[in-house]
Length: 470
Image (tube, rainbow, N blue to C red):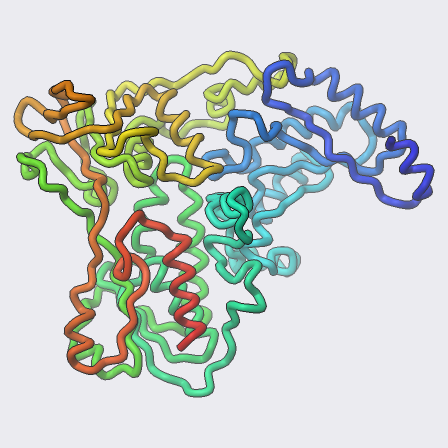
């Protein structure tokens, strides 16, 4: 086939062949078979070989945020010594620095990216002009790109909601410059402030804490979600570049807010504490306090609530610290010599020394909350760590014995040291009604507007959409 194409297009036409170099499925190709095919392709007239990692059927993560940066560049490097044509490497390359490191170490001749261009369409120009710090980094969450594609929706980007909506979500210059106060510098508030400033509004961003980022400051501490700090970094830089006045450590007051033309409430959420007898027991802590304050917990922990936050907390409790790339590969059964078919060997699971129960009231699959392209990774990871997943749970009592539950009609006592509550959130919206009563033009976005499952994609988009409409 390649020979026929080459014959038809002539010697100067570039032919790029995508070759699966690591199948990650049972009975997949061995490295020797990959080498033989690559050499045959070169002889047939292929100009460049592009690296493919993992079949769609592979049950090993290859592009999600849990995958370390440039985790598979070594696969391309192994083939370089066997062919003389250029090789392209790919997967979890999201900054110019990562790409340059691959090239400078001779692991590949070129790098391939896709999702980073949704996050920042000016990625290439900024890299060329040595402005890497101005790039809106892809965090590999998949929530608005691949999850949308597999659901038959239009692809976009969590950190850049204008992606694929460039002709609809337009930030045109304002005809009337107004003074706007935004209360809360989480993802929604920051995104809204940046977009308003781009349109020419005068924006004050008030934050009661001494730092910006809101819930992203919690997310970035979860193993596998460290990339979220990149969004805080980029949004912070844009706030500075656009002249937004960020006022940290400042509680918003009614007297202060009523002087603005528009007020936007983006004060986020607080954990909801369910009405379980004994919920005030000293062993109980909410997820926000646990992560934010780095609270020390015992070796036996129950997590109540198996949505996205509960899954994150269970991951936080059981993941190994400072896991190397080599350890990550072994953990997922990837054999670096690639001698075995598909590059697989038996999993070398890291089993947590901490015993964790992750529970939900709903019957059915536990931890179903995360997206289609990442949820299975979370669930498989927790299973590998030895986390017990329980659905259809009734929470009866918390006392010195532990957590009393009923599962499928059977009563159990989990003799746990700590119980972490991840049972939803409530909106922090106490300023909204008083401002409305004063006649202030007030708008509500983010978690303050809707406290359901925390959804960064929704809140960032909501912030930008409001900014486009004002």
